[in-house]
Length: 328
Image (cartoon, rainbow, N blue to C red; front, side, top):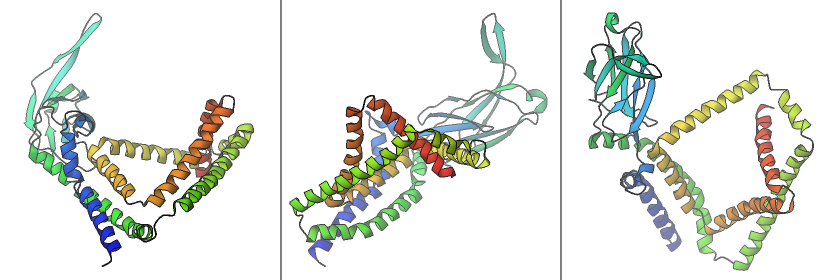
C-alpha cells in the first residue's frame, strides 16, 4: 500500500469516525448551558389531531380546547416532535369539561363537570371513550403530566440510526469520487502560479456567466410584459395550481424537518464532513465561482443608481422566471 493510499484511508477514517459520533455529539451539545436550547428536542401531545408542542423537560402540558365529539371518542397521543414517530408512554392525563363564563368585559373558563383521568399507553396513544350523555358537545381541556426519562431519550436517539447510516453511505460514495482528486493533489504538488492563473480564469468564466444571467434578467426588467404574458397564460390553469400545491407540500415538509433538531444536526454534520472531503484545488474553484457572482452584484449596487433596489428586483425576477420555467 502506497503512502498516498495510507494518507487517504486515514483521512476518510477520521471523517467517518467523526460523523458516526454525531448523535453522541448532539446529545453532549444539547446539554451545553450556553446554546443547548438551540438543539434541544421537543415533545408534543395531540388531542383528536390537534397538536401542542412543549420543551422536553416540561412536566405539565395544557392542550388547546376541543369540543367533545357526539360519539364521545377522544384520541390522545404523546410523542417526540421528530420526523419519525417515537412514542412517550405511561403519561398521566386529565380531561376536564369546561364552560365559558362572562362578567362584563372579562371572561374565564370554569369546570363544568367531573374530570376523566387515565394514562397514555406504552405506544404513546390512548383512545378514550367518554360517556356521551355527560360529555358530548362540551368544551374539553386536556392536561398531560409527562415525565420524559433517560430511557425515552435513548429510544429517540436510536431512531436516527437509519438516517445516520443512509448519510454515511452517501459520504462513502462521495469519497470514492473524491479519492481521485486527493490522489492527484498529493502526487502532483501545486504549481502556485498555475493555480493562480486557473483561479483567475475561473473567476472570468464565472463573471461572464453571472453577467449573462443578469443581462437576461435586465431584458425582462426593461420589458416585463414578456414575463407577465408568460405567467398570465397559466394563472388560472390546473398546472399552476398543481405547482403551487406541490410547493406548499414541500414547504410543510421542510417545516417539519426544521422542528426535528437532531435530524437537522445530522444533515448539517454530513454537509460539514462532505466539505472536509474536498481537495484544496476544488475549494479554490468553488470560491472563485462564488466570489464572481458576488462581485458582479456588489459592483452593480455601487455603480448603478438605485443599485440595491435593482438587485432586489432582479431577485424577484429570478423567482418569477423559475416559476415560469416550472410550468412552461
